[in-house]
Amino acid sequence: MSPELPKDIEQNIHDLELAIKALLAVNSLEVPALRLRLDELLRIEESRWYFHTVVKMVSDQANQLI
Image (cartoon, rainbow, N blue to C red; front, side, top):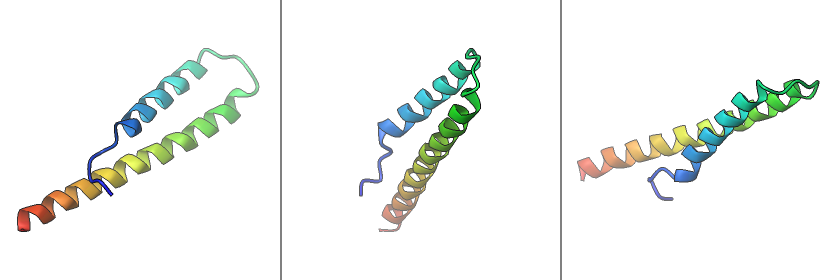
C-alpha cells in the first residue's frame, strides 16, 4: 500500500461538500434523506483521508529511524 495520499480522496471530499451546499437550494421532501446519504459518504471519505494521512505519518517516522 502506498503511503501517498490519493488525490481522489481530496477530490471526493470537495465534490461532496459542493453537493451538500447545492442541496440548500433544493426545496423537496427528499432533501433530508439525500443529506443523510451525502453525510455518510463524506464520513467515509474523511475516514479514508485520515487513514492515509496516519499511514503516511507513521511511514515517514519509520523511515527517519532507519
